[in-house]
Length: 552
Image (cartoon, rainbow, N blue to C red; front, side):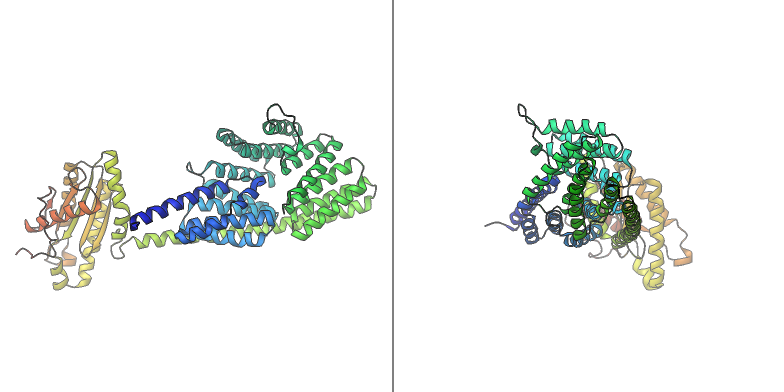
């Protein structure tokens, strides 16, 4: 039978296995999304919920919603889930999940034709990348960043990001990501007015996907790569090649059975352009009508505007300049409406970003308040429990010294009983200020915490035991020599301290060092108070001084 510890370890190992599987699905390029769906991220979400791993559950359900949105066209569910997960990731400061939620939200706004918001999310995701971000996610973020820059017309900057992604993909030795990077690079070069450079990039892509000793076949390319190839062929005046390329692309799209409505409409638009250039205006009109219908059914606003532009070109090609002019006006009106909608969306996004940033700030402030003593403004025991173990481990790892001291005000009860609790509070806040100011002159990496009542904890990193002892005595003297008369009258205020160091502690852990410091504080009280005792006494299991009989 497993022990509780073994059960916890087993659950932790399973959660890590599930995370590894999930990252593999997240880093699948678009043309392989069906593979990710077959891996059933919903099953990972269910098991993550059973394990109680909320972040893993959020991440899995985000991927499931993304796949349904991209493969089934369910953008509404994709939007709802992405917003919910993003909000949770913001509130809980989960960096890797935020990268994913920004990426999914950026993709969503790409589908909706909202380039500014797409760029906002792409920038946010890129800013969160770290060295431990999985390489596939890093490449994907850079490609989305490049696509977003291209969508707002920043082609030079876009090409820079795409080239970065290409280099990462090359270093990874990952053909799937490399071909995505090459395709994006070719498209960006085409948009920037360099069709010859785009053609050369596509030649590299085709060489990369063609096995040695086998002739290249168009079916070796993915649909979006074929569309890019046709666009380059049109730009180079190879219209017949482009028409044949897009007819093959649409046939492959139909055979794939995917619900990529945006891609389907875009492929038809590219075919219509090739057909117009060939003078096949009737066929071009049929292709445009089919593309327009898809855009209307699925609210693809940016593509719909592009179709109007091509429609004006087609009317002009048939000599119907009046209709061409009318449609051109429709295109300009649609472009204006799209631009206004994008600006409104951008304003909403900026407001949401402000509210999100505000929420994160408030959450950070709340976390800080939860770790701060409300009376003195010093750190509290919760902060100590969260930070001291790590500081001790770091000091031991580096071979450095860390000093921990407990300080307790002498005869503090007499101040409360003789004067008032308000006077006692004033003493505590003044002592806190004295200690904080004095410690700031000694070190900028230590801290002071109020442990409760009149007891304080002082942590001094990177000082040898002798220097730390001298610093503590300086702090003690600063309290004794303060002008207390306005608060306590003739009653003195002094402090006793007991300290220990990682260099001398028998048990250099938080519990062990606090116990040693407490025994030394007990010894300081019994030795007459107003003193610091640093050398650890024999380990006798003495009760804490406040629980033991007080010396007379």
